[in-house]
Length: 337
Image (cartoon, rainbow, N blue to C red; front, side, top):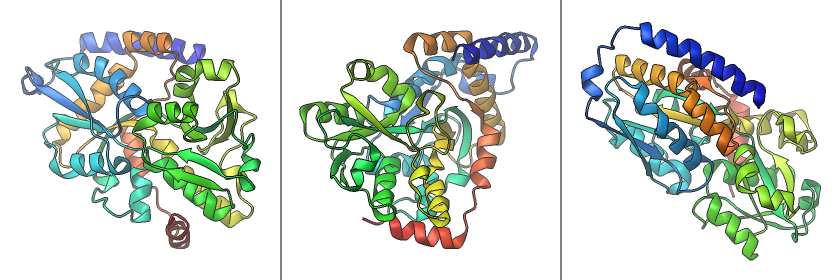
């Protein structure tokens, strides 16, 4: 973490010098006096909300004209409501951006009912953080390790599409006994429900859990069961990945697909058909904001993490994420409840 922040600070100084020497952007007048709405696909609280509001506090001053960035929570249908809104109904002039559920592209591959958005047609502005969520359980739950979930029921609260899909797939592929509850809005409500004994477990990105659940971790009130991303977090070497539960090569290919949302993680996106020159402005502003010493200092104070990826690279990763037809067919079967 320290090395990452030091590296980003060096990049920030270089970027700041370049910005001082750069000519004024042609779109200076467009954003002047305007408001950019940042649509958040979840309720307040939790990782999506935390990182959306973090970038919102810094992005505006790097956009020519310095518009106000206003976060707006739009939960509903496990992220599909916000995705469809941003895709079809939001302004396509650069005054609407958003942070969608990281499973939006996977939902599209699976043909999830209700989703009308095409993830490849969004204009991906940049990633703040890749995301390997961690499934954790209350210390009183019978499940102490993920292997215990093969023989004991674990009541898991899910407020996003990615976690709901993951636990459904694991039930159908490896035989876990997750009972999935979808009625809570966001991880903050789910965590309170766990403490009250209404559910046994939930998942959150590790950088967020490490902060929001600091006391729970310190007092050993929760057990870390599983990581959902393709790669293990360096701090969680002893916590298995979802992919590690695969029993065959076919299972591994399938679980790799369901681990793919970690690449999108916490990313900013704009609707399709935004003028290319405005997409360019938003991407350049995002790159500058993510290297801004003020943002990096706030990340340090909040004990969060950054794992940025530029918009063009993120766009290419999503456009190139083709999946073998037989894997897609099986994925659609096992994703059904």
